[in-house]
Amino acid sequence: MEELRDKNGLTEAEYLAAYKPGDYARPSVAVDMVIFSAADTKEENYRKLPQKELKVLLIQRGGHPYLGTWALPGGFVEPNETTEQAAQRELSEETGVENIYLEQLYTFSEPNRDPRTWVMSCSYLALIDSSKVSVSAGDDARRAEWFTVRLDTVSKKINESSDLIEKITEYKLVLLCEDIELSGSVKHTMKRTGAGIENIYEIIESNGIAFDHARIISYAVERLRGKVQYTDIALNLVPEYFTLTELQQVYEVILGTKLIKAPFRRKYGAMLCEPSEKTTSDAGHRPSRLYRRKWLTE
Image 1 (cartoon, one colour):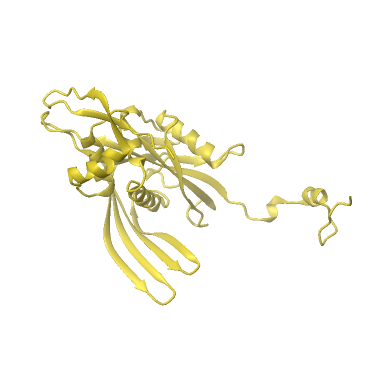
Image 2 (image 1 turned 30 degrees about the vertical axis):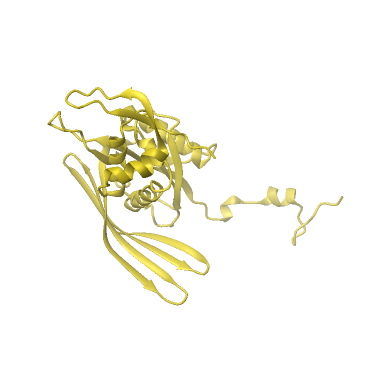
């Protein structure tokens, strides 16, 4: 059977032999890791249960660009890797932990998002039980620290027409670690047309946060807030055995609101958890039943 030839008379083998990758612009590809944990606050009164805070891991950059500013951990995808493998590698290098919850967030591909060159970022969301993690800065970083995350809605506006619904939400992002305060303002525009939904994230202001990582973190918090309401994703932020109060605190720091105990336990406790034979043994507190994840099956 005669081989097929293209309009220039070339077979596929001839076409590939003459192909020049340099004829087309090629972006670099990186992975950026949004690693969340839910850590206990320090409580001076031992009779009071510690509260939880949503934390994100950041590294202080040790080289240009953005020398000295704080960024998400990550790195470039190597030639022999998929983005998933690169994310797993970076996660292991930064936290020393493997086999934890990891999902792809979004690919940020604007040509001007990195001052060096066109760098596409394939971002990933990871959830870690902070009690199992020991973080350390890599070779290209000065420090690695957990920052408390606060994402507040500043304004909302909806524009509607016969063929478009446009929802504009502006967020204020604040990241805190001891005496360090970083901040950013991010605008999320959601456009719904007959062709589908388009989401656009823009940085209005960024103070001390490198690259466009303020919008990546904001996107990740939004994703997490959405998924906790219909999946068991929050259970990746608690130990193997936990109290229902601890689980409720995790939901509260993610959603940014207080929840009523009884409805929470009916909706999430009964559906996602099962009681174990274990109880707490903390001094100063009455023993509480410890629960564990109820693994959901189809």
